[in-house]
Structures are given as C-alpha cells and as structure tokens.
Image (cartoon, rainbow, N blue to C red):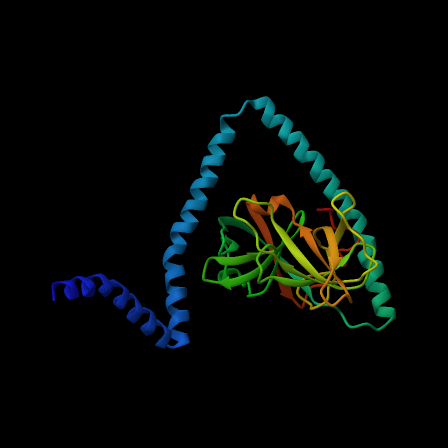
Amino acid sequence: MRLFNQLSGQARPFFTLGMVALAWLLVPAAVKRFARAALFEAQAPILVTAGRVRELQEYWALRTRPANELIAAGHETAKALAGYELGVARLGPIEEENMRLRELLAMPPQPGWRYEHAAVDVRDFSAWWQQLVIRKGSDYGIPVDAPVVFAGGVVGRVREVHAHTSVVALLSDPGVRLAVAVEGDSRPISYAGGDNPVFGPARGTVEYVPTDLIASPAVPRHLLTSGLGGVFPAGLPVGLLTRVEPSTDGLFNIGEVRLPAALSELSEVTVLVPDATLGRPDLRATAPKP
C-alpha cells in the first residue's frame, strides 16, 4: 500500500499535465487565438520598453565617443545621402518614361506600396523561431503577410499583427516561401527557409532549379525576387546561391542559399504596405547586391 501511494504521488504531476493538455486541445480555436493575442499584448509594453532602453544606451554610448569620430561619421553620412539623392534624381525620368509607355500600351496601373519604417524590439533566433518583433502594428495599418525589407534586400514577411507591434518571420524561417530567380535569368525558382542552427549563419534552400544553372561557393549566383505571387516586388536581393545538386527525380536541381549576415543585426526595417493609389516601381535595376 505504501508503494502504491508513492507511485501515485510520483505520477500525479504527469496526470495533471495530461489533463491540462487534454483540456487545452478541447478549447475552441477562437478562444486559443484570443488567449494568445491577449498574452502577447500583455507582453508588448515590456518588449517596447526594452527596445527603448537599448536605444537610450546606444545614444549615451555615442555621446561618450570623441568629437572627431562623430564628425567623420557625419561626413560619411553626408556622402551616402548625396549618393542616394543622385539615385533618386536619376529614377525620376525613368519612372516618367515607364508611366508614359504604360499609358501608350493601355496597361492597367499596378498597385504600389506605402513604406512604414519600424524599429526592431526583439530578435528571436532559436530552434523554434526565426523572427523579429517590430514596433508597429495595426495602429499603422500593417497587414498580415506584408513584405518586410531593408537596405540589403528582403527581411521576411509579417506573420502576426497586434495593436502596437508585429511579428516578422525571417527569410531563414522554414515557413517562409517565395518565388525567386537567378540574376540575369527570368525562370522562377522556389525558395524556402532552412533548418538553421542557433549560432550558425542563416541559410535557405531552393527547389526546381533548372539543370543548366551552375553555382558553387567560389562562383555564387545572386538570387532576386521574381515578382510572382504579388507579395514581393521584383528585383529585391534574397541571398547567394552557393550550391546546387540534382534532385531525387532528376528533372531539376536543388540548392543552398546563403542569406545576408545583417539579418541577425537589424535594428530597423521597412514594411511595404499595399496601397492601390500609389504606382509600383520596378526595382530590378536599382536593387543593391546582398
């Protein structure tokens, strides 16, 4: 009897855990979504506060640097801004010519995007998640599945939207898929995030690669968004195709993609919010290399 009581006492926590898990499985999906959203909203002030504290620390760290370094950084920033202004000035006539040709061909206008810049509050890189939490949500009209970019190309897409924050699934997340193409080749390729180690470099995978495309670590190929699917604009850098090999069926190749290292260090990103009142530029000629 004593042995039975001991075994019962040891099994009681597992029995309780099983009952809780069973009860959770029986809860309606709507209640689960509400509970998850409520929990995230309760944590949001802590996440935002942590992000603002980090920005304050960076501000005071910069204040301690010598004035000569700040002046030199200001000169470099001025040079970069001058280069960007020159690029914008060159794009103006190209966009006007593009619009004129589309009118002559009676082509329907393409919907465009409104750019929402957002600070990154949390970077979550683990065996379970490859995501960011940014400091803008439904209060700025950000929708689910909106594309997210930075100066080096694609960051990922919005997975969840809350009142004042949003969760962005990174390119390295296995759940992120998009159509890409090798630079200089219009044939579409399927991209998906890979199984990334916590402390390893970010990478992804590609399928349906034409057998005549060759890539290696010594001679990588640049991958750009193809524009198919209507989520990401065409011409945005995705990463470098570093390896290809035959697939199991032998009809196509599969390959490995090295993603930009900056994905793990982003402090600000830009969300492309669809806006039908704006024109959509072609980014193929102006996209930077990853």
